[in-house]
Image (tube, rainbow, N blue to C red; front, top):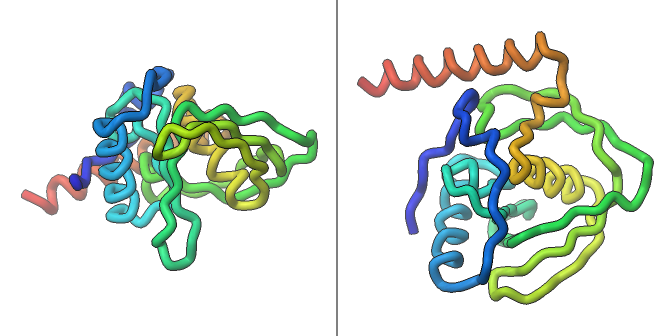
Length: 172
């Protein structure tokens, strides 16, 4: 398995709409395994393929306390099941060290193909609902900071650029 670099804002690839996956095969499973390894290395709970530069409709996540229960979502479709929304303080591996509150539907239905290509459907609530919607947004080229005011969004991008620059300088 390979740990991939995670794209950060303002990389234009993060704004791409990801393409549907035609079939779940060994190559896709290898990609998903790499994504899980990358997510764990970055201490994240979810990762969309586009965040490592692959524009496929694939999400991985692990909400378990022990970080030992990865989940795989291929070609996911999320449908809100309620008009009730809940605020949640979100962060993102592509926007390191930035957190802000986003309102999302409290309960959603998720249809997807799993790691083996089997069709699945389930109801997501609480952190699962927040995470799947956040990662779904990535597949549509939307970042959580897109829900914030222009001022907060611009500040977030500048903060990340500064952080990335300082990390690069420290690595030299």
